[in-house]
Image (cartoon, rainbow, N blue to C red; front, side):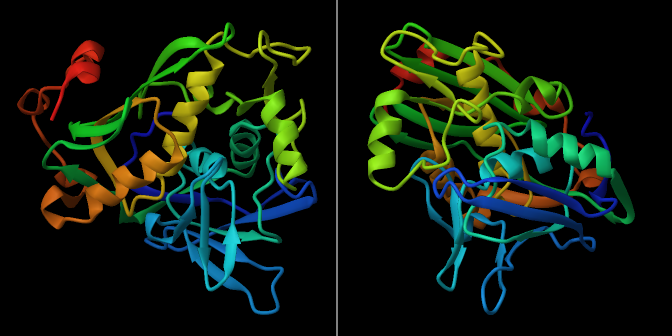
Amino acid sequence: MEDNSIYQKTVRKDVTIEGVGLHSGKPAKLVIKPALPNAGIIFVRTDLEKPVTIPASYEFVTQTKLATTIGRDQAKISTVEHLLCALKLMQIDNAMIEVSGPEVPIMDGSAAPFCKAIALAGVREEVSALRKVAILRKRIEVRKGDKIALIEPSTRFHINARIEWNHPAIGTQSFEYTVGETDYQEVASARTFGFMKDVEALKKMGLALGGSFDNAVVMDEEKVLNLEGLRYADEFVRHKVLDAIGDFALSPVQVMGDVTLVKAGHEMHSELIHAIFSNPDNFEVVTIEEAIIEEESLGVLETNWAAVLQRTY
């Protein structure tokens, strides 16, 4: 789906999605509802005595271990990144998301079921409201050992991700995604993944009770255990890009920049977003119509992995 509209969008009608919570193993239900222009993405916990509204914003991120969790006033909603990725891929700027529990349904472990449900409901363009973007003014980086998350000024939103895993099925993988250029299905259907030994340990801790071969790629020490195998040879890094798109959807507005991720996950994505928006000198918010910038002046370049990995500061 081309992300080339200058106008904000919402869903045409209610979208109801039901599944299982990854950690609780209990039924989970959500309803995506149309929202007014400039409302953004708003979650609502509807199962509580008094419903709690939680904006889909980096400021409300409460946990980034294994998944991204947002919360407010003791209420939380976990594993929001796959749904947020789907909303971004389907160009939804404004929506009210009612969730009847502490988890977004895990579905098949990817964003594809959410994308399909949104596509069936339809998308409505709000011609009264222009989209806004954040134009990056400087290079910003988060680094922890050999893990890197950085963003550089650009006229596009582009992710270049690289992972390295000492496992025969994974190894070293790279994947690139660019808004408006990469077919959303190339990212949406990539599933989350994990190792059987970790799944067993998590279940003993009361976590991942809803995890199964139906909603994750599961591996032992040597191979993928799912009978159907992988959807892509590089499904692992594609899912990492999916996660990053979902996490970046927690930005106040779409960031224009070239993102490089090396072994990065939810925690570093969140820290990078915090670093961007913590200083108003880092960016300028404009409408897409106003964001007419010469591509050459910002120097959109291919990622030089050797330079990224060896550079010291």
